[in-house]
Length: 337
Image (cartoon, rainbow, N blue to C red; front, side):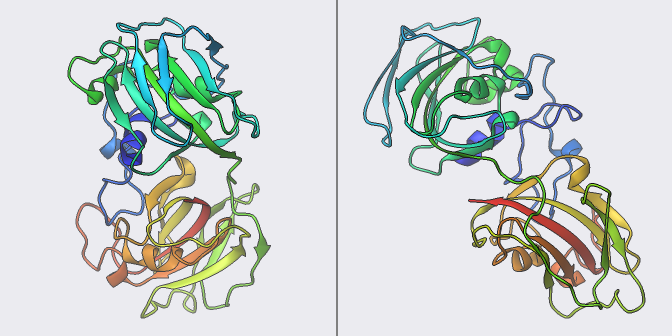
């Protein structure tokens, strides 16, 4: 299932301890989980970010046999025990689509196997395809996908050095940071996702807090006054930039950047721009109600200002250090799927 691949393949930026990312299972009322609270510490040989990756070597004789047509779950036989010191791939079916580059977001269906036993330990088949920025997934997977083509079916033998580190134990008993894993993946799509809202500028009403921008166009906060800090009865969702992408639907996974502040004084309490984009399921109660109400129906690429009453945020007396009262956010919607 994709939620499993997200927990196991995704890594935090180098500035944060490498960890399993528990975006979907984190507290449903948080628009952004605290990386320090949700991270699981790992050893120095743990999952590594895919920055400055190089393509894996191709070995047509790799001891992995696969039957079945691309687009259907494969039958995979691993000659065990399989152990590699260098991440290696075997192209099983050559695709004819675009070449995968290091700047791409890649969508793929997969099954994952332990090289020691050949047993399947994870799979997206029967669920939803995985979708990740190539630079943000386990390095061995990134190396195996880099330089391939959309339409490929590929087997990747992931070396321990490029693999899951201490987090490998999450895949099953007897698996550890020295385990070689085999990923068989169908490359479904690849594209460069935006990193900031892009589209047509929209002039907002004068009674909303003004969003302040840095020199690079990234939102940094808000300017509020006696005329712009009025609490609405219901969440206000005002596009500031209208993106040209598809409309966000309830139940989709949405990738966003945001800044949040208290409406009364404009004091910023959190900014994803300082850490990493926030990814969550929208419209299903995984985030505060104001986000579910305000993000669903917007278009990918948009920048949206959300003014949220306390009842649709954390309330007037929240616990756990969450901000009280009415809140204001500016959200850049980068992707939805």
